[in-house]
Image (cartoon, rainbow, N blue to C red; front, side, top):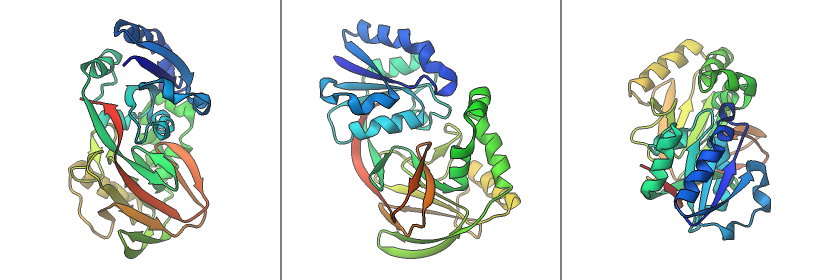
Length: 285
C-alpha cells in the first residue's frame, strides 16, 4: 500500500464518502503511503500504472466502475462502504463502520474473487433483468437518500404489484432452455439485504460459478411466498422459481434493460455471460 488511488463517489449513500475523506487520507499517511483522490467519473483519465492499491469510497455501483481497471492486474482493491446497499462488502465481511473497514485493510488479508463478464461489462456482484432491474433502476435517488437500503424494500413491494413475464431463450453451459420469467438474476455472490437473504446455497464470490435465479410468477402473493422460503433457506425448483448454476450463459436478446451491480444498462445484442475466475485481488476478512 505505497501508492493509493482513492476513488470517491460523494453522491452515494447519503454522501458518506464526503464525511470520511479526511479519515481515509489520514489512514494512508499513517501507513507510510501516498495517495491521490479521483472522482468515480474521472477513471478514464487516470494512469492506473502509478498505483498499487485502489480504494473505492462508494457503493456497489462505484465498485463496479472501478473493477474493469483491476481485472487480472497486480493491484489490490480496498472497499470503504459508503453506498446504499454495499452487498459485495457485506459478503467479504467488510463493516459499514469506517474504522472497522479501514482495520480490515490494515490487517492485509487479501483474497482473489471471481468476476462476471456481461457483454464485455464487468460485474462483481450480480446482473438482473425484469423485477430485479425495476427495483434497482427505478428506485429514486431521493428515496435512497432518505431511507437508505430500506428504499429498495419499499420499491420491491410496489413493483411486485405489476410483475410481467417475458419469454427467454437461454443456453446454460451448452444446454438450451425456454422459460417464461418475471425476473432473472445472474450472481457472482447472491446475497441480498446485506447478508440476511441469499438467492443460492453456499454462494461465494470465489467459487467459479454463476448462481442463476429465475422467478416464474406474476402473482405478488406467490412471490412473497417464495421470498419467505428464501428467507428461511428453502430454495427448491418449483412452479414459482428455479435455482441453477453455470459458467457460461447465452440469452437471445430483444433490447433488454438490466442492471449490472446497480447501474442501469441497455443491452442491444444477444447476451453472453461468463465467469472470470480469481480475477481481482481484494482486502477482506
